[in-house]
Amino acid sequence: MVTARITVNGKETPISPAAPHTTVLDFLRERGLTGTKEGCAEGECGACSVLVARPGVNKPTDWVAVNACLVPAAALDGQEVVTSEGLATAGEPGTPPTLHPVQQEMAVCGGSQCGYCTPGFICSMAAEYYRPDRCAHADSGTASAPSDSTDSEHGPNGFDLHSLSGNLCRCTGYRPIRDAAFAVGEPTEDDPLAQRREQSPPEPVATEYAQDDRVFVRKNTLAETVQLLRERPEAVVVAGSTDWGVEVNIRSRRADCVVGIDRLPELRELRIESDHIEIGAALTLTEIERRLDGRVPLLAELFPQFASRLIRNGATLGGNLGTGSPIGDSPPVLLALEASLVLADADGERVVPLADYFTGYRQSVRRPGELIRAVRIPLPLSPVTAFHKIAKRRFDDISSVAVAFALDIEDGVVRKARIGLGGVAATPIRALAAETALEGKPWVPATVEAAAQVLRAQGTPMNDHRASADYRAAMLGQSLLKLYARTPEAVSS
Image: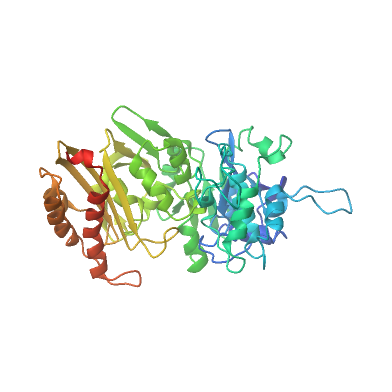
């Protein structure tokens, strides 16, 4: 068996003797790369972020920032990782290294105080620095005073502050960090990491990394993977590990067999056909967002509200649906879009409407040894859509209630209504009664107010630390009223 290795800052490093559940964070720190920190161990603070070479959208390779605290080191077998230490350029013997432009701007702008979170900010900022389609805006002002052509979340240099939404700082304050982000220029022609984007990323490698009777396995093909799952139905299947990584860190869960599916080519396709869009279950949310480029407006509205950029760089639709969580953000949207799932096992494939997929709390019709291969969204899309996520924070939070709408309104009449709900029942659900209350009715205040009353009674919301049952019910009705208030008048005329 070939020794499992990760290329870290240009140097091949064996994963052994780390255990199969060892995270990239612990793997790096055990090798002296202590810039990578553990803050929360849940993917919420970004102190652990590192860069990974991934297949690009606009270039062969993208430098993608991920939470090292969540990803098993074995999952990066054969891959390339750059840490905050690897960004600086080594100087002559006896001289200090030359700071990376991102590091330099953080120093000049005073973006670091205690320094604990700084390496994570640096790596997330570097990923945005190297984003191929980032470009300066003409007449966009300065970092401290953007012009009217920009906004507070996008710099004159094209820097998107949402790339830092998964990084927390508890002492410096965010203004100098923003100033540093908005001050960075373009990579130079001789920048080695910029040049690396022009070459293909490492190919996925078959992995079987075992220690102490536990094993991490990645197969080359879907057929090999589903056969393995038939032989070992108890195996834990992971893609971005954004859910399983938390279980490992916080609840000390261990699995005898973990199967990685994130690089399987059959699960990484995105096809737009005449009657549907098929999205591979192992494509990350960031990849889907950039490849669809607004083609599905309801998904485009979901993505910025789904956790943080760091999480979206690893999380997948297959993983979000596979966990069966009633508070996942994607199920309400996909229910409103009338999506179906392509399920695969060693016997073949079957297609299941998402509305029939969930059977109970974190339970579904998915059989042992079966995995989600793709999500299918039928075409044409409904023209009136919206996604409302009610949470305590604007970004990077778990929803108290999530509501997705997809309506066809013709000549002022609701011809079709689809409403997906999350956080108000043991499973994500369709608001069937509210849909019926809308369909065939004129799109006018009386109809909407009556349907909102029906919508308030949908599901079985509970009281918990995020929201009361009464609040959740009230927000359901309010969401429909909000949709009506924001709907262009043209559709109701």
